Image (cartoon, rainbow, N blue to C red; front, top):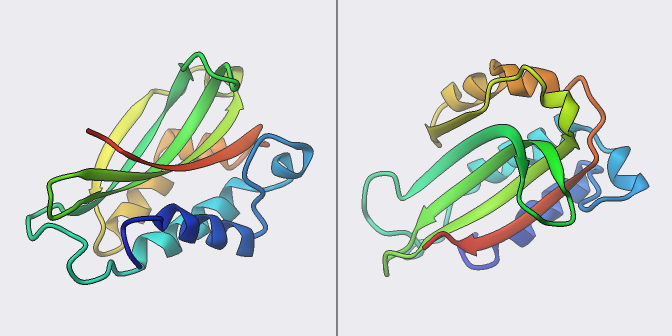
Length: 153
């Protein structure tokens, strides 16, 4: 898989898992568990030779959660976010995001978190699945899902 356009691969994996991206009645029928399984698959796909810088941490995972209001169409929501971040040979930092939104009150009492995790091994899976936010998220119905890719610089 190439870094450029890799968000399309994530979208494809989500579709295979029956996850509808967006904010709709179909999206609310999708499960966090299915989205998480798609992201786990996405995280294991090797990146094409030459697409990554030859530096430590050139392919990492970020897991974030909390109640946020970014001033967009989602408003104030409790979010669980899975991010794969690449560093390219020209030192660009590309991120592919999968964000699951819930009503803000779902996150009441759940501590916010941001964890950088190595992509290798199963440690990152256990870290995410053991977090209070993930445990909360899998027991609630989402408002919807967002996927995008951006330069983080």
